Image 1 (cartoon, rainbow, N blue to C red):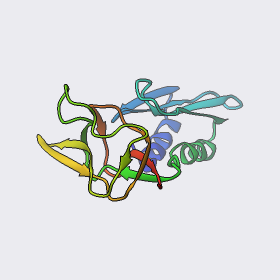
Image 2 (image 1 turned 60 degrees about the vertical axis):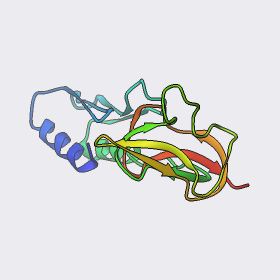
Image 3 (image 1 turned 180 degrees about the horizontal axis):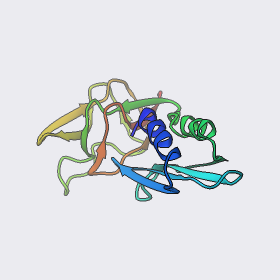
Image 4 (image 1 turned 180 degrees about the vertical axis):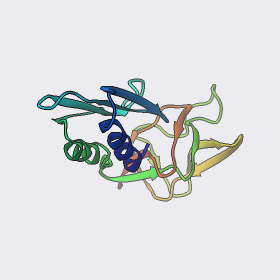
Length: 160
């Protein structure tokens, strides 16, 4: 759900008696609680609890402008320092060639330009993802067999 859809939802709810709504889409949850004037509304944005990422919580007055400001703050991208290897497509990431095989790379490994670091399955096709840079793996940002989006960071590297 993008910012425009959230704003439309807030405007729509302001003309109804609905006091709370929660929508989960693509692993992210948006919950809007609307209270009487003078109260506060808690808006929660973030991934599902099974994903190991931050959950954003913002309290604001029950005015659409304040809620939209909370939306803008919560939806800004998380900055990752260093070099990242991003997913070139939407699909499912596999960190090893098969369940019995060791992972292509692990934290601390030196990766060379052109080295296969993972596989992204898209439409039943297995696509080997190669590193475009050389460096040491600082962190693996996705779990094996988890969904990935286009441009989503998969690995964090540091220069060596």
